[in-house]
Length: 118
Length: 113
Image (cartoon, rainbow over all chains, first blue to last red; front, side):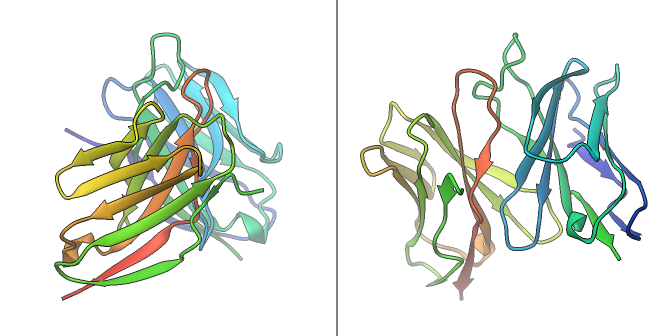
């Protein structure tokens, strides 16, 4: 069975540009979460989507946005890139409770998209 | 304000010995704790979890201990194997509601043959 897939795996952008990262969850998983992992730090929560609705948002500026599509895949968009946005962006899918809560839903992570901003 | 702390950035252990990775948390509302393992160029993979109603959970060579009064948990790996060399992240969540996982900074474990 395919796990969580992310694209692209690596990309380089310059300051001020925009980036779109994509994620396909595990088949049957309806929830997608995005995390940012800066070098030397643990993953930090950016967004959670369930059934195409935003269910949670971390402490990130409005330059960060996301959406979930009817097939449960997701995109993370970052506008006006800054050097500090350089990080590994991780997507995770889960099979949450019927009401969309995370519950005990274990997160299954993709390999990540490594973004370098020059 | 780090709610989940892994104070040891790295740990080296000889093959066959016990590895003990520690994690402290500050939010007393956390009631579900997980350990994830991450190899280079891969995403974190789930290892083991424990609910706050328990103080120990075991899965093969991996055991997690929870001390709620001290807000401390630890992961024991016995015996350690070279393939266990990876970064280990402690994570915590408030199970009710819709709160995300909060991760520590990770501990890099090196198991030396």
